[in-house]
Each structure stands twice: as structure tokens, then as C-alpha cells.
Amino acid sequence: MSLPSAAAFAVLADLAAVGAVPLQFGGLEGAVETATGPLGLLIIAVYSFLIAVVLPLPSEVVLVAAESGLDLGLPLVLDYAVVMLVSGLGKAAGSVVAFEIGHEAKRRSGPITERLRDSRFDIVEWSERRTVDLAREYGYIGMALALSVPFFPDTISIYAFTVLEEDYVKFAAAAFAGSVGRLLITVGVLAPFLAL
Image (cartoon, rainbow, N blue to C red; front, side, top):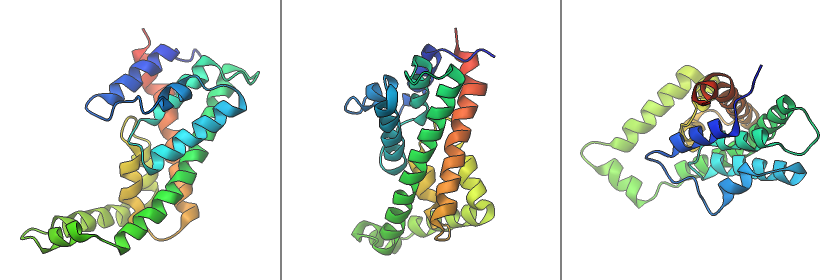
């Protein structure tokens, strides 16, 4: 099996940026793309953590590091596996922080939220009810599936699912499974079609 080239992932990352926040975020994307060795794995973990919590950037960028070579002395397939594992763990840790932030924000809705609640059409109540309904219907499996969609910002899905019960382990496990699933879909399904 031939794995897609780094150029294919660069094309995917560019596609993800269309209409979104530019991918160059203080050089962080460049650091991820050129990450090597144990320090590179730490960079990938921190990037994945940050996109779970605050950065609406595509997580697929981490695959460029695997294709470029991590200098760990592993075959390319294992480089991909290590990157997916590290990225998934980083995103799982970030999801727990986002989970806590989401619950705290829910407890302390600010004046804007209160004004929206008092408006003629309560958009806050409607969106909360809709999200709760989706979370109840699909649960953690729904969260993992939502996070498996390539190029959709993880941050949105993670915060949308903070309405689930307060089980940090299940929440982190769903984030890990969704993160790895997304990278597997990107490598196995999408990237071969974009490799020129």
C-alpha cells in the first residue's frame, strides 16, 4: 500500500482553510508540519490539545509531519500510527479541558446570553435544546462520529457535546476515537484522490 504524499496533505489543509481561519497561526502550523523526534511529537500533542480547546484549525495538518518523517527510525506506516496516537491523546486531553470550560460557561451565562434569552425568539434555548436532543440521541458515539468528519473544526463538535453527562473518561475516549477516525479517513479515503 502506498501512502499519500505530503503534498496531498498540504492540499487537504489548504482546502480546510477555505472560508475559515487562516492556517498560519503564529507559525504553529509550520512547526507541526516540520515536527521531528520526541520534541516534534510534543508539538503535535500540544497542537492537537489547542485545536480541541481554542483553535478552529484542521487537525489533518499533523499528517504532514508523518509523511515528512519524524526521524524516529520507524517505517512510514508506524510514523503515521504514532502521529495519530499522539494527536488523539492531545485532543482527548484538550477535550476534557473544553468539557470543563463548557460546563463552567453554562453555569455562568453572561449578559449577552441573558438578553438573547429575553428576546422574542429564544435562540439560546432553541440551540441548547437541539444540542441536548442530539447528544441524548447519539451520545458519545455521536460525538466520536462528529469528530471523524474531516476538515470540520473539532472545537465546535467538542463544545456542542459538553451537554453530555459528566463522565470525563467517556468524553475523552470519544474525542480520541473521533480524532483517530478522522485521520484514518483522511489517509485512507481522501488523500489518495488528491495525490497528483
